[in-house]
Amino acid sequence: MEATVKERLYRLVDRIPDEDVRAAERYLEYLTEFGDPFVRALMNAPEEDEVISPDEEEAVQEGLEDIAAGRVHSLDDVKQELGL
Image 1 (cartoon, rainbow, N blue to C red):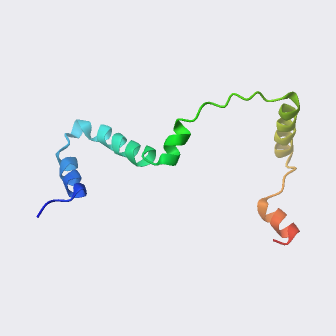
Image 2: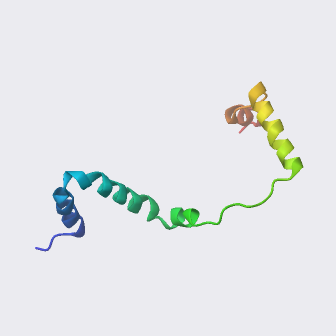
Image 3: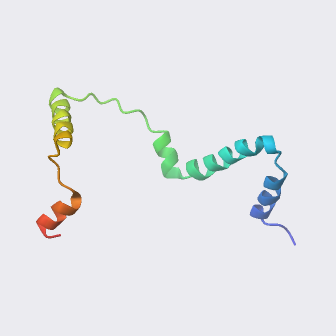
């Protein structure tokens, strides 16, 4: 009977020298995380280069000040107020 691909991988993992185990782990993590086409597309997306306008910068600053001052509402509070 022919071994499955995963069975062969298990045997290979058992043969990895101790000093290379961490490198093998990192590579397998890479394959599982970046093998996803969506994640790969995000990783290869061009860097955002849009300039933030002064008005947008001011709005961000106001939002940060509201958060620091506690002038915020939780999502649950908003849902309750709207009857959702």
